[in-house]
Length: 146
Image (cartoon, rainbow, N blue to C red; front, side, top):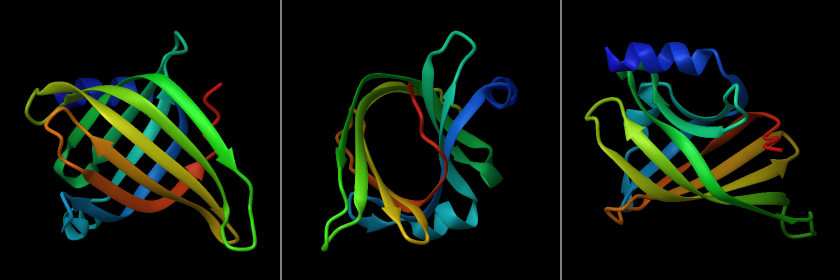
């Protein structure tokens, strides 16, 4: 029942960006098949009171982690002859899991890469367990968090 409540609340929020997972690893072990076969993605969304939230959605299994972000920093790198333009976002994520009711805080690094065919992303999440969660894929939206 918790998931239904979260999903309704999430859907009523203003989605800023969606990140579709095409590759996933946990502690350098490939997890891609689970994430891609379950239509997994990440989102940034803003609540009515202007708080920025981040969420991890595993569509087919009705699993998600969600929560507010804090300590957001952003750095940008211009395109060069050897690399694409990128924006790097670092933040803390205070999350709750719908599937096991676990709550915690994670350090997150998101790199948004502007390529000719679209916007790619690389995402690293390190929760309090010190596991290394890594995801890659493509982004939809503007990621305007101002």
